[in-house]
Image (cartoon, rainbow, N blue to C red):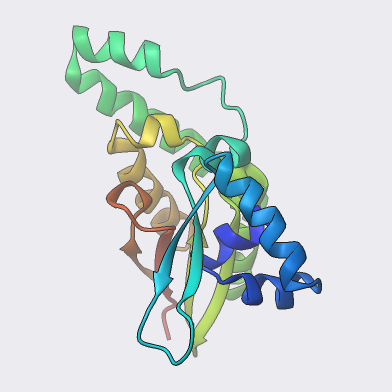
Length: 198
């Protein structure tokens, strides 16, 4: 249920019941427990006929639940590096980005661009980003990262977010890749519009 809430950004109990093929009352029980634990919050949707509906969204507490542990990044070590040489932090992130690009590129070698977008999304999903991809036009895709695998780092060091954008640009050569939403700026996902060359 939490996965479905994160993928949707916001959802009502009825939305979730339909998606999960269960009853609204069962969904409300689970949502009540998740809300009590601090994993979801809700806002009332007004302006519709009838009783206002609660729209649920995941809180920041859920980020660590979906993250793949990454021993190569330590917030404490980055803090020490920043104290010694702030520019070195940027260089560390750049070095990490180059390594990730090389590893992903080896897995995607020889893949046509359209298939590459799908396989890259699947790769990001296995890394803990709860990623999905939707086609929104001819040669036009949106990659959604509904969770952040390195949230504790990204929420403090924006170099991680910048590196993510450049990572996608390098791995989909010739495409125009633009970020349209950012989790660290308050959005429920990091979303990227990808337009393939015609």
